Image (tube, rainbow over all chains, first blue to last red; front, top):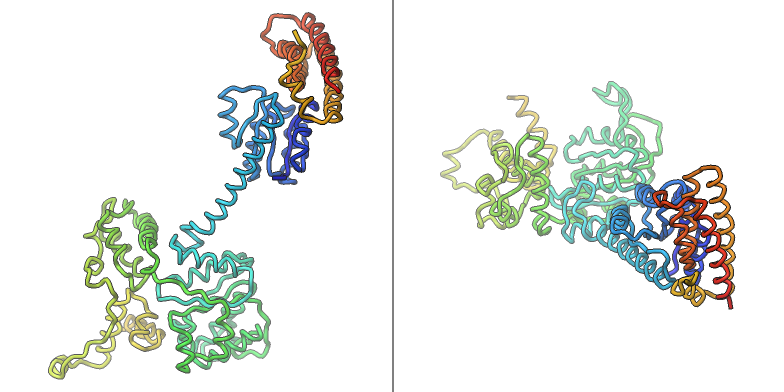
Length: 459
Length: 109
Protein backbone atom coordinates (compact mmCIF):
# COMPACT_ATOMS: atom_id res chain seq x y z
CA UNK A 1 0.00 0.00 0.00
CA UNK A 2 1.51 3.36 -1.00
CA UNK A 3 2.22 5.49 2.05
CA UNK A 4 4.07 8.56 3.29
CA UNK A 5 7.40 7.41 4.66
CA UNK A 6 9.78 9.54 6.69
CA UNK A 7 13.33 8.19 6.67
CA UNK A 8 15.53 9.42 9.52
CA UNK A 9 19.14 8.54 8.67
CA UNK A 10 22.27 10.64 8.98
CA UNK A 11 24.60 8.61 6.73
CA UNK A 12 23.96 9.42 3.04
CA UNK A 13 24.94 5.94 1.79
CA UNK A 14 22.43 4.25 4.09
CA UNK A 15 19.72 6.77 3.26
CA UNK A 16 20.34 6.31 -0.48
CA UNK A 17 20.07 2.52 -0.15
CA UNK A 18 16.83 2.67 1.86
CA UNK A 19 15.26 5.08 -0.64
CA UNK A 20 16.34 2.88 -3.54
CA UNK A 21 14.83 -0.20 -1.89
CA UNK A 22 11.48 1.54 -1.32
CA UNK A 23 11.36 3.16 -4.75
CA UNK A 24 9.09 0.53 -6.34
CA UNK A 25 6.47 0.60 -3.58
CA UNK A 26 4.86 3.80 -4.86
CA UNK A 27 5.59 5.49 -1.53
CA UNK A 28 6.15 9.18 -1.02
CA UNK A 29 9.47 9.35 0.80
CA UNK A 30 11.02 12.24 2.68
CA UNK A 31 14.39 12.19 4.38
CA UNK A 32 15.73 13.91 7.50
CA UNK A 33 19.36 13.72 8.61
CA UNK A 34 18.82 14.78 12.22
CA UNK A 35 16.27 13.93 14.89
CA UNK A 36 15.32 17.59 15.25
CA UNK A 37 14.62 17.96 11.52
CA UNK A 38 12.66 14.71 11.58
CA UNK A 39 10.52 15.88 14.49
CA UNK A 40 9.60 19.14 12.76
CA UNK A 41 8.90 17.40 9.44
CA UNK A 42 6.83 14.61 11.01
CA UNK A 43 4.60 17.00 12.93
CA UNK A 44 3.93 19.04 9.81
CA UNK A 45 3.73 16.27 7.21
CA UNK A 46 2.12 13.48 9.31
CA UNK A 47 3.80 10.44 7.77
CA UNK A 48 2.23 6.98 7.87
CA UNK A 49 5.52 5.39 8.86
CA UNK A 50 8.85 6.58 10.25
CA UNK A 51 12.06 4.60 9.66
CA UNK A 52 14.39 5.68 12.46
CA UNK A 53 18.13 5.19 12.81
CA UNK A 54 18.95 4.91 16.51
CA UNK A 55 22.19 6.91 16.52
CA UNK A 56 21.65 10.44 15.23
CA UNK A 57 23.80 13.56 15.50
CA UNK A 58 21.56 15.64 17.80
CA UNK A 59 19.52 13.23 19.92
CA UNK A 60 18.76 9.51 19.78
CA UNK A 61 16.14 7.73 17.70
CA UNK A 62 14.58 6.44 20.94
CA UNK A 63 14.16 10.03 22.17
CA UNK A 64 12.73 11.01 18.78
CA UNK A 65 10.08 8.26 19.01
CA UNK A 66 9.25 9.36 22.56
CA UNK A 67 8.68 12.93 21.37
CA UNK A 68 6.63 11.83 18.37
CA UNK A 69 4.39 9.69 20.59
CA UNK A 70 4.02 12.58 23.03
CA UNK A 71 2.90 14.71 20.09
CA UNK A 72 0.22 12.06 19.34
CA UNK A 73 1.71 11.08 15.97
CA UNK A 74 -0.05 7.91 14.88
CA UNK A 75 2.68 6.74 12.47
CA UNK A 76 4.09 3.22 12.47
CA UNK A 77 7.69 3.44 13.69
CA UNK A 78 10.41 1.06 12.59
CA UNK A 79 13.86 1.16 14.11
CA UNK A 80 16.92 0.66 11.92
CA UNK A 81 19.82 -0.49 14.05
CA UNK A 82 23.23 -2.08 13.80
CA UNK A 83 22.98 -3.01 17.49
CA UNK A 84 20.90 -6.16 17.56
CA UNK A 85 20.72 -6.61 21.29
CA UNK A 86 17.54 -7.66 23.08
CA UNK A 87 17.91 -4.61 25.33
CA UNK A 88 17.83 -2.25 22.33
CA UNK A 89 14.83 -4.03 20.84
CA UNK A 90 12.88 -3.98 24.12
CA UNK A 91 13.64 -0.30 24.65
CA UNK A 92 12.54 0.52 21.09
CA UNK A 93 9.30 -1.43 21.49
CA UNK A 94 8.59 0.28 24.81
CA UNK A 95 8.84 3.63 23.06
CA UNK A 96 6.25 2.54 20.52
CA UNK A 97 8.27 0.96 17.70
CA UNK A 98 6.25 -1.52 15.63
CA UNK A 99 9.35 -3.48 14.65
CA UNK A 100 13.08 -3.18 14.16
CA UNK A 101 15.45 -4.11 11.35
CA UNK A 102 19.07 -5.07 11.76
CA UNK A 103 21.54 -3.36 9.44
CA UNK A 104 22.53 -4.27 6.84
CA UNK A 105 19.17 -5.42 5.53
CA UNK A 106 17.87 -6.67 2.21
CA UNK A 107 15.20 -4.85 0.24
CA UNK A 108 12.82 -7.79 0.80
CA UNK A 109 13.25 -7.53 4.58
CA UNK A 110 12.67 -3.77 4.52
CA UNK A 111 9.56 -4.03 2.35
CA UNK A 112 7.98 -6.87 4.36
CA UNK A 113 8.63 -5.13 7.67
CA UNK A 114 7.24 -1.84 6.38
CA UNK A 115 4.15 -3.45 4.83
CA UNK A 116 3.42 -5.35 8.05
CA UNK A 117 3.79 -2.22 10.15
CA UNK A 118 1.52 -0.20 7.83
CA UNK A 119 -1.09 -2.95 7.79
CA UNK A 120 -0.99 -3.24 11.57
CA UNK A 121 -1.40 0.52 11.87
CA UNK A 122 -4.40 0.54 9.53
CA UNK A 123 -6.03 -2.32 11.42
CA UNK A 124 -5.46 -0.52 14.70
CA UNK A 125 -7.06 2.63 13.28
CA UNK A 126 -10.05 0.64 12.01
CA UNK A 127 -10.36 -1.01 15.39
CA UNK A 128 -10.26 2.34 17.17
CA UNK A 129 -13.03 3.67 14.94
CA UNK A 130 -15.12 0.52 15.41
CA UNK A 131 -14.57 0.61 19.17
CA UNK A 132 -15.48 4.27 19.36
CA UNK A 133 -18.69 3.58 17.44
CA UNK A 134 -19.73 0.28 18.96
CA UNK A 135 -18.31 -0.22 22.38
CA UNK A 136 -18.71 3.05 24.18
CA UNK A 137 -19.62 2.63 27.81
CA UNK A 138 -19.70 6.39 28.37
CA UNK A 139 -20.84 9.25 26.18
CA UNK A 140 -20.73 12.70 27.74
CA UNK A 141 -23.06 12.34 30.76
CA UNK A 142 -24.49 8.99 29.69
CA UNK A 143 -23.38 5.65 31.11
CA UNK A 144 -24.39 2.62 29.04
CA UNK A 145 -22.94 0.25 26.49
CA UNK A 146 -26.13 -1.43 25.23
CA UNK A 147 -26.94 -1.42 21.49
CA UNK A 148 -29.91 0.99 21.94
CA UNK A 149 -27.60 3.50 23.64
CA UNK A 150 -24.91 3.08 20.97
CA UNK A 151 -27.58 4.05 18.44
CA UNK A 152 -28.43 7.12 20.55
CA UNK A 153 -24.76 8.15 20.72
CA UNK A 154 -24.42 7.82 16.94
CA UNK A 155 -27.59 9.84 16.31
CA UNK A 156 -26.40 12.61 18.61
CA UNK A 157 -22.99 12.69 16.89
CA UNK A 158 -24.57 12.83 13.46
CA UNK A 159 -26.63 15.95 14.25
CA UNK A 160 -24.27 17.99 16.40
CA UNK A 161 -23.01 20.20 13.62
CA UNK A 162 -26.53 20.94 12.35
CA UNK A 163 -28.80 23.71 13.63
CA UNK A 164 -31.88 21.50 13.21
CA UNK A 165 -34.19 21.27 16.22
CA UNK A 166 -33.90 18.00 18.09
CA UNK A 167 -36.93 16.51 19.82
CA UNK A 168 -36.06 14.14 22.64
CA UNK A 169 -38.69 11.75 23.90
CA UNK A 170 -38.58 9.01 26.47
CA UNK A 171 -40.02 8.01 29.80
CA UNK A 172 -39.19 10.13 32.81
CA UNK A 173 -35.74 9.42 34.15
CA UNK A 174 -34.28 8.17 30.86
CA UNK A 175 -31.89 11.12 30.55
CA UNK A 176 -33.55 13.63 28.23
CA UNK A 177 -31.59 16.52 29.72
CA UNK A 178 -28.38 14.47 29.42
CA UNK A 179 -29.16 14.03 25.72
CA UNK A 180 -29.63 17.79 25.35
CA UNK A 181 -26.37 18.47 27.20
CA UNK A 182 -24.52 15.92 25.03
CA UNK A 183 -25.91 17.60 21.90
CA UNK A 184 -24.56 20.88 23.18
CA UNK A 185 -21.19 19.61 24.44
CA UNK A 186 -20.43 17.70 21.24
CA UNK A 187 -21.43 20.62 19.01
CA UNK A 188 -19.44 23.64 17.82
CA UNK A 189 -21.61 25.61 20.28
CA UNK A 190 -19.97 23.92 23.28
CA UNK A 191 -18.16 27.09 24.31
CA UNK A 192 -21.41 29.05 24.39
CA UNK A 193 -24.25 28.85 26.96
CA UNK A 194 -26.50 25.84 27.51
CA UNK A 195 -29.76 27.04 29.02
CA UNK A 196 -32.41 24.59 30.23
CA UNK A 197 -35.98 25.55 31.01
CA UNK A 198 -38.55 23.14 32.44
CA UNK A 199 -41.84 24.28 30.96
CA UNK A 200 -43.76 22.05 33.34
CA UNK A 201 -42.20 23.47 36.47
CA UNK A 202 -42.89 27.14 35.84
CA UNK A 203 -46.28 28.72 36.55
CA UNK A 204 -47.93 29.59 33.23
CA UNK A 205 -48.01 33.33 33.96
CA UNK A 206 -44.26 33.38 34.46
CA UNK A 207 -43.27 31.18 31.53
CA UNK A 208 -43.18 33.94 28.90
CA UNK A 209 -40.94 36.07 31.10
CA UNK A 210 -38.67 33.09 31.85
CA UNK A 211 -38.36 32.30 28.15
CA UNK A 212 -38.27 35.71 26.49
CA UNK A 213 -37.41 38.02 29.41
CA UNK A 214 -39.17 41.19 30.43
CA UNK A 215 -38.51 44.88 30.81
CA UNK A 216 -38.71 46.70 34.09
CA UNK A 217 -42.30 47.52 34.94
CA UNK A 218 -43.79 45.03 32.48
CA UNK A 219 -45.93 43.62 35.26
CA UNK A 220 -46.32 43.91 39.02
CA UNK A 221 -43.08 42.71 40.55
CA UNK A 222 -40.95 43.29 37.43
CA UNK A 223 -38.53 45.55 39.26
CA UNK A 224 -35.68 44.97 36.83
CA UNK A 225 -35.07 43.96 33.23
CA UNK A 226 -34.79 40.20 32.79
CA UNK A 227 -32.83 38.63 29.93
CA UNK A 228 -34.85 35.42 29.58
CA UNK A 229 -33.65 31.97 28.54
CA UNK A 230 -33.77 32.53 24.76
CA UNK A 231 -31.44 35.54 24.83
CA UNK A 232 -29.25 33.97 27.55
CA UNK A 233 -28.71 31.02 25.20
CA UNK A 234 -27.65 33.22 22.26
CA UNK A 235 -24.92 31.41 20.31
CA UNK A 236 -25.57 28.23 22.28
CA UNK A 237 -28.34 25.75 22.99
CA UNK A 238 -31.80 26.30 24.47
CA UNK A 239 -33.32 23.19 26.03
CA UNK A 240 -37.08 23.28 26.59
CA UNK A 241 -37.91 20.35 28.81
CA UNK A 242 -41.46 19.07 29.23
CA UNK A 243 -42.60 21.12 26.27
CA UNK A 244 -45.82 19.10 26.26
CA UNK A 245 -46.82 21.02 29.39
CA UNK A 246 -46.54 24.39 27.65
CA UNK A 247 -49.83 26.36 27.76
CA UNK A 248 -51.52 26.97 24.41
CA UNK A 249 -50.95 30.73 24.45
CA UNK A 250 -47.21 30.20 24.97
CA UNK A 251 -47.13 27.67 22.13
CA UNK A 252 -48.15 30.45 19.74
CA UNK A 253 -45.34 32.68 21.00
CA UNK A 254 -42.82 29.87 20.82
CA UNK A 255 -43.90 29.11 17.24
CA UNK A 256 -43.28 32.74 16.28
CA UNK A 257 -39.85 32.59 17.90
CA UNK A 258 -38.95 29.31 16.16
CA UNK A 259 -40.02 30.74 12.80
CA UNK A 260 -38.29 34.10 13.11
CA UNK A 261 -35.52 33.64 15.68
CA UNK A 262 -36.62 36.99 17.07
CA UNK A 263 -37.28 37.69 20.75
CA UNK A 264 -39.41 40.48 22.14
CA UNK A 265 -39.22 40.70 25.92
CA UNK A 266 -42.48 40.99 27.82
CA UNK A 267 -43.50 44.66 27.98
CA UNK A 268 -40.78 45.61 25.52
CA UNK A 269 -41.07 47.11 22.05
CA UNK A 270 -37.62 46.28 20.72
CA UNK A 271 -37.07 42.88 19.11
CA UNK A 272 -33.77 41.08 19.09
CA UNK A 273 -32.52 38.35 16.78
CA UNK A 274 -30.88 35.43 18.57
CA UNK A 275 -29.00 32.38 17.31
CA UNK A 276 -29.96 29.34 19.34
CA UNK A 277 -30.02 25.62 18.67
CA UNK A 278 -33.32 24.41 20.07
CA UNK A 279 -33.67 21.06 21.81
CA UNK A 280 -37.11 20.08 23.09
CA UNK A 281 -38.16 17.16 25.25
CA UNK A 282 -41.24 15.56 26.71
CA UNK A 283 -42.19 12.32 28.40
CA UNK A 284 -45.57 12.52 26.71
CA UNK A 285 -46.61 11.04 23.36
CA UNK A 286 -46.46 14.38 21.60
CA UNK A 287 -48.32 13.21 18.50
CA UNK A 288 -51.18 12.04 20.72
CA UNK A 289 -51.12 15.48 22.32
CA UNK A 290 -51.43 17.04 18.86
CA UNK A 291 -54.30 14.72 17.96
CA UNK A 292 -56.03 15.54 21.24
CA UNK A 293 -55.75 19.24 20.41
CA UNK A 294 -53.50 20.02 23.37
CA UNK A 295 -50.40 20.75 21.31
CA UNK A 296 -50.32 22.93 18.19
CA UNK A 297 -49.79 20.95 15.03
CA UNK A 298 -47.84 23.76 13.32
CA UNK A 299 -45.47 23.99 16.28
CA UNK A 300 -45.12 20.20 16.30
CA UNK A 301 -43.95 20.21 12.68
CA UNK A 302 -41.54 23.06 13.40
CA UNK A 303 -39.81 21.41 16.31
CA UNK A 304 -40.16 17.68 15.62
CA UNK A 305 -37.31 17.74 13.12
CA UNK A 306 -34.75 15.25 14.45
CA UNK A 307 -36.44 12.88 16.89
CA UNK A 308 -34.39 11.02 19.47
CA UNK A 309 -36.26 8.45 21.52
CA UNK A 310 -34.40 7.42 24.64
CA UNK A 311 -34.94 3.79 25.61
CA UNK A 312 -36.25 2.94 29.08
CA UNK A 313 -33.72 1.30 31.39
CA UNK A 314 -35.60 -2.04 31.26
CA UNK A 315 -34.78 -2.29 27.53
CA UNK A 316 -31.08 -1.51 27.99
CA UNK A 317 -29.96 -4.96 29.15
CA UNK A 318 -26.80 -4.89 31.22
CA UNK A 319 -26.83 -1.08 31.35
CA UNK A 320 -28.82 -1.16 34.62
CA UNK A 321 -25.82 -2.78 36.32
CA UNK A 322 -23.30 -0.48 34.57
CA UNK A 323 -25.25 2.60 35.63
CA UNK A 324 -25.67 1.20 39.14
CA UNK A 325 -21.89 0.65 39.51
CA UNK A 326 -21.21 4.16 38.25
CA UNK A 327 -23.73 5.73 40.64
CA UNK A 328 -22.51 3.64 43.58
CA UNK A 329 -18.96 4.92 43.09
CA UNK A 330 -20.25 8.48 42.84
CA UNK A 331 -22.46 8.33 45.93
CA UNK A 332 -19.89 6.43 48.00
CA UNK A 333 -17.39 9.24 47.34
CA UNK A 334 -19.95 11.92 48.10
CA UNK A 335 -21.10 10.27 51.31
CA UNK A 336 -17.63 9.19 52.46
CA UNK A 337 -18.56 5.48 52.38
CA UNK A 338 -16.38 2.48 51.42
CA UNK A 339 -18.76 0.81 48.95
CA UNK A 340 -16.92 -0.54 45.91
CA UNK A 341 -19.51 -2.83 44.30
CA UNK A 342 -22.53 -5.11 44.64
CA UNK A 343 -22.73 -8.72 45.73
CA UNK A 344 -24.03 -11.21 43.15
CA UNK A 345 -27.57 -11.29 44.55
CA UNK A 346 -27.86 -7.50 44.57
CA UNK A 347 -26.70 -7.35 40.96
CA UNK A 348 -29.23 -10.02 40.01
CA UNK A 349 -32.01 -8.02 41.66
CA UNK A 350 -30.93 -4.81 39.88
CA UNK A 351 -30.80 -6.67 36.58
CA UNK A 352 -34.24 -8.26 37.04
CA UNK A 353 -36.17 -5.21 38.20
CA UNK A 354 -37.98 -3.31 35.42
CA UNK A 355 -37.16 0.18 36.82
CA UNK A 356 -40.38 2.01 35.93
CA UNK A 357 -38.78 5.27 37.14
CA UNK A 358 -35.68 4.54 35.03
CA UNK A 359 -32.29 5.98 36.03
CA UNK A 360 -33.86 8.49 38.40
CA UNK A 361 -35.41 5.65 40.40
CA UNK A 362 -32.09 3.79 40.37
CA UNK A 363 -30.41 6.95 41.69
CA UNK A 364 -32.87 7.15 44.58
CA UNK A 365 -32.51 3.47 45.48
CA UNK A 366 -28.70 3.65 45.50
CA UNK A 367 -28.50 6.94 47.33
CA UNK A 368 -30.76 5.42 49.97
CA UNK A 369 -28.61 2.26 50.25
CA UNK A 370 -25.36 4.24 50.51
CA UNK A 371 -26.70 6.66 53.10
CA UNK A 372 -28.36 4.07 55.32
CA UNK A 373 -25.77 1.27 55.20
CA UNK A 374 -22.03 0.60 55.46
CA UNK A 375 -19.51 -1.93 54.17
CA UNK A 376 -17.70 -2.52 50.93
CA UNK A 377 -20.44 -4.37 49.02
CA UNK A 378 -24.08 -3.46 48.59
CA UNK A 379 -26.03 -6.61 49.44
CA UNK A 380 -29.52 -7.72 48.46
CA UNK A 381 -30.78 -6.85 51.97
CA UNK A 382 -29.77 -3.20 51.50
CA UNK A 383 -32.10 -2.80 48.53
CA UNK A 384 -35.77 -1.83 48.90
CA UNK A 385 -38.21 -4.72 49.29
CA UNK A 386 -39.87 -3.56 46.08
CA UNK A 387 -36.89 -4.79 44.05
CA UNK A 388 -36.80 -8.19 45.64
CA UNK A 389 -40.29 -9.37 44.78
CA UNK A 390 -40.83 -11.07 41.49
CA UNK A 391 -44.47 -9.99 41.57
CA UNK A 392 -43.41 -6.43 40.77
CA UNK A 393 -41.39 -7.46 37.75
CA UNK A 394 -43.97 -5.57 35.71
CA UNK A 395 -44.71 -2.02 36.87
CA UNK A 396 -48.10 -1.71 38.47
CA UNK A 397 -50.09 1.12 36.94
CA UNK A 398 -51.02 3.71 39.51
CA UNK A 399 -54.76 3.96 40.06
CA UNK A 400 -56.32 5.91 42.86
CA UNK A 401 -58.20 3.68 45.27
CA UNK A 402 -61.95 3.26 44.73
CA UNK A 403 -63.25 2.82 48.29
CA UNK A 404 -66.72 1.60 49.13
CA UNK A 405 -69.39 4.06 50.31
CA UNK A 406 -69.07 2.65 53.82
CA UNK A 407 -65.33 3.10 53.82
CA UNK A 408 -65.75 6.56 52.39
CA UNK A 409 -68.14 7.75 55.09
CA UNK A 410 -65.89 6.38 57.79
CA UNK A 411 -62.87 8.21 56.30
CA UNK A 412 -64.36 11.49 55.21
CA UNK A 413 -61.75 14.19 55.43
CA UNK A 414 -61.26 17.74 54.12
CA UNK A 415 -60.85 17.88 50.36
CA UNK A 416 -57.42 19.55 50.71
CA UNK A 417 -56.21 16.66 52.88
CA UNK A 418 -57.32 14.11 50.27
CA UNK A 419 -55.62 16.10 47.57
CA UNK A 420 -52.39 16.26 49.57
CA UNK A 421 -52.51 12.54 50.33
CA UNK A 422 -53.07 11.62 46.69
CA UNK A 423 -50.28 13.88 45.44
CA UNK A 424 -47.83 12.53 48.02
CA UNK A 425 -48.82 8.94 47.14
CA UNK A 426 -48.22 9.65 43.47
CA UNK A 427 -44.82 11.21 44.21
CA UNK A 428 -43.84 8.23 46.35
CA UNK A 429 -44.96 5.82 43.64
CA UNK A 430 -42.89 7.58 40.97
CA UNK A 431 -39.76 8.04 43.07
CA UNK A 432 -40.42 11.79 43.51
CA UNK A 433 -40.72 12.31 39.76
CA UNK A 434 -43.01 15.35 39.56
CA UNK A 435 -43.83 15.28 35.80
CA UNK A 436 -44.67 11.57 35.97
CA UNK A 437 -46.74 11.97 39.13
CA UNK A 438 -48.58 14.85 37.46
CA UNK A 439 -49.25 12.69 34.41
CA UNK A 440 -50.72 9.94 36.59
CA UNK A 441 -52.93 12.43 38.41
CA UNK A 442 -53.78 14.11 35.09
CA UNK A 443 -52.83 17.53 36.38
CA UNK A 444 -50.15 20.03 35.37
CA UNK A 445 -46.73 19.52 37.06
CA UNK A 446 -46.75 23.19 38.00
CA UNK A 447 -49.78 22.42 40.20
CA UNK A 448 -47.69 19.94 42.17
CA UNK A 449 -44.82 22.37 42.53
CA UNK A 450 -47.21 25.07 43.70
CA UNK A 451 -48.83 22.75 46.22
CA UNK A 452 -45.48 21.57 47.54
CA UNK A 453 -44.35 25.17 48.06
CA UNK A 454 -47.60 26.02 49.82
CA UNK A 455 -47.40 22.99 52.15
CA UNK A 456 -43.83 23.81 52.97
CA UNK A 457 -44.69 27.39 53.80
CA UNK A 458 -47.64 26.18 55.93
CA UNK A 459 -45.15 24.04 57.86
CA UNK B 1 40.10 -12.02 2.46
CA UNK B 2 37.54 -10.36 0.19
CA UNK B 3 36.80 -6.69 0.87
CA UNK B 4 33.09 -7.29 0.37
CA UNK B 5 30.43 -9.55 1.85
CA UNK B 6 28.75 -10.96 -1.28
CA UNK B 7 25.46 -11.56 0.58
CA UNK B 8 25.16 -7.79 1.01
CA UNK B 9 27.03 -6.15 -1.85
CA UNK B 10 26.07 -8.83 -4.39
CA UNK B 11 22.45 -8.69 -3.29
CA UNK B 12 22.38 -4.91 -3.71
CA UNK B 13 23.85 -5.16 -7.19
CA UNK B 14 21.26 -7.80 -8.02
CA UNK B 15 18.21 -6.08 -6.48
CA UNK B 16 18.77 -2.57 -7.75
CA UNK B 17 18.81 -1.25 -11.32
CA UNK B 18 22.39 -0.55 -12.51
CA UNK B 19 21.97 3.23 -12.58
CA UNK B 20 20.65 3.21 -8.99
CA UNK B 21 23.47 0.94 -7.85
CA UNK B 22 25.97 3.30 -9.52
CA UNK B 23 24.41 6.26 -7.65
CA UNK B 24 24.81 4.38 -4.37
CA UNK B 25 28.47 3.61 -5.06
CA UNK B 26 29.01 7.30 -5.90
CA UNK B 27 27.32 8.34 -2.64
CA UNK B 28 29.42 5.81 -0.71
CA UNK B 29 32.57 7.19 -2.30
CA UNK B 30 31.62 10.72 -1.26
CA UNK B 31 30.91 9.49 2.27
CA UNK B 32 34.27 7.72 2.39
CA UNK B 33 36.21 10.78 1.28
CA UNK B 34 34.42 13.04 3.77
CA UNK B 35 34.51 10.65 6.73
CA UNK B 36 38.17 9.65 6.30
CA UNK B 37 39.00 13.34 6.16
CA UNK B 38 36.96 13.94 9.34
CA UNK B 39 38.73 11.04 11.06
CA UNK B 40 42.18 12.40 10.20
CA UNK B 41 41.28 15.96 11.23
CA UNK B 42 39.76 14.77 14.52
CA UNK B 43 42.82 12.60 15.23
CA UNK B 44 45.25 15.47 14.53
CA UNK B 45 43.29 17.90 16.72
CA UNK B 46 42.81 15.38 19.53
CA UNK B 47 39.00 15.51 19.17
CA UNK B 48 38.12 12.05 20.49
CA UNK B 49 34.34 12.53 20.23
CA UNK B 50 34.58 13.72 16.62
CA UNK B 51 36.88 10.81 15.82
CA UNK B 52 34.47 8.21 17.24
CA UNK B 53 31.45 9.87 15.59
CA UNK B 54 33.10 9.82 12.16
CA UNK B 55 34.20 6.21 12.71
CA UNK B 56 30.62 5.27 13.66
CA UNK B 57 29.23 6.81 10.45
CA UNK B 58 31.92 5.09 8.42
CA UNK B 59 31.07 1.72 10.03
CA UNK B 60 27.39 2.23 9.16
CA UNK B 61 28.05 3.23 5.54
CA UNK B 62 30.48 0.33 5.06
CA UNK B 63 28.07 -2.21 6.56
CA UNK B 64 25.31 -0.96 4.27
CA UNK B 65 27.27 -1.83 1.13
CA UNK B 66 28.83 -4.99 2.63
CA UNK B 67 32.36 -3.55 2.92
CA UNK B 68 33.16 -5.87 5.83
CA UNK B 69 36.90 -5.18 6.08
CA UNK B 70 36.37 -1.44 6.21
CA UNK B 71 33.52 -1.85 8.69
CA UNK B 72 35.82 -3.93 10.97
CA UNK B 73 38.51 -1.21 10.96
CA UNK B 74 35.91 1.53 11.51
CA UNK B 75 34.51 -0.34 14.52
CA UNK B 76 38.00 -0.62 15.99
CA UNK B 77 38.41 3.13 15.50
CA UNK B 78 35.08 3.95 17.15
CA UNK B 79 35.85 1.83 20.22
CA UNK B 80 37.88 3.96 22.65
CA UNK B 81 38.65 0.87 24.78
CA UNK B 82 40.64 -0.89 22.04
CA UNK B 83 44.46 -0.80 22.52
CA UNK B 84 45.62 0.20 19.02
CA UNK B 85 46.57 3.80 18.44
CA UNK B 86 44.76 5.80 15.78
CA UNK B 87 48.05 6.21 13.93
CA UNK B 88 48.10 2.43 13.47
CA UNK B 89 44.42 1.98 12.66
CA UNK B 90 44.01 4.86 10.18
CA UNK B 91 46.39 3.61 7.46
CA UNK B 92 44.77 0.16 7.58
CA UNK B 93 41.35 1.80 7.36
CA UNK B 94 42.35 3.87 4.32
CA UNK B 95 43.70 0.76 2.60
CA UNK B 96 40.45 -1.12 3.31
CA UNK B 97 38.45 1.82 1.92
CA UNK B 98 40.44 1.74 -1.29
CA UNK B 99 39.97 -2.02 -1.63
CA UNK B 100 36.23 -1.79 -0.93
CA UNK B 101 35.73 0.87 -3.58
CA UNK B 102 37.58 -1.15 -6.19
CA UNK B 103 35.57 -4.26 -5.38
CA UNK B 104 32.30 -2.32 -5.57
CA UNK B 105 33.18 -0.77 -8.93
CA UNK B 106 33.88 -4.27 -10.17
CA UNK B 107 30.28 -5.19 -9.41
CA UNK B 108 28.92 -2.50 -11.75
CA UNK B 109 27.83 -4.17 -14.97
